[in-house]
Amino acid sequence: MRITFLTIFPQLFDSFLASPIPQRAVKKGALEIEVVDIRDYSPGSFRHIDDSPFGGGPGMVMRCQPVLDALSAVRKAHPAPASVSAALSPAGAVFTQKTARRYAELDHLILICGHYEGMDERICRRVDEEVSIGDFILTGGELAAMAVADAVIRLLPGAIRPESTGEESFENGLLEYPQYTQPAVYDGESVPDVLLSGNHEKIRKWRLKESLRRTLLRRPDLLADRIPADEERRLLEEIRKELQ
Image (cartoon, rainbow, N blue to C red):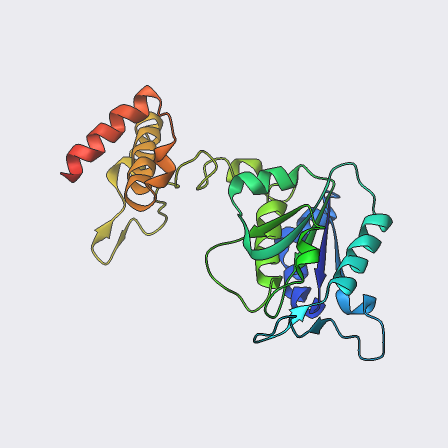
């Protein structure tokens, strides 16, 4: 797949592009990345990409012409049967692991990074969707775009080992179980005995139970629409009794 970032600060992506996971996906042939400077599509020597909002108010707003011209040029240069343009915006739908998996199936994902007080509404009306990484405000959409891209890239073939993603938080609708490594005892706190037992069935059951416990305590909303299997139902009953 191809991921295109539309931004007014292309230098912010240098470290991201040099990081191991994107580089590995590129080397495996699973990914192409391009960073497009929106300022290149703004006419005049000053290349203005923002202006005061009509109707008054504080701050500046990104002008629609440079952004939409950049978007049009990218679409024409890389036509793809499965393509999505997404503007990073606090008003967008919340980005989830389900969204990441949908994006990972695309041929081309175009991420548009907002800035200042926001983007001209005509930009939002001409993109396929708006997406948010949470209920907070960033100075610009670059960090949010990198977060979205990272979540997508690690799902591509060859980016990381497939077994590394199967039991992660949100992949099965639950938070991931606690993890431990050496040393077995640190500052008087020991790794749970079951993880040292070598009994794979007991370890599997412990991990499922702890995954359910963590989800119940930290993200009960994830369980609200979940239809638990019989084993999960029994474990949840045990957990609720233990918490009483």
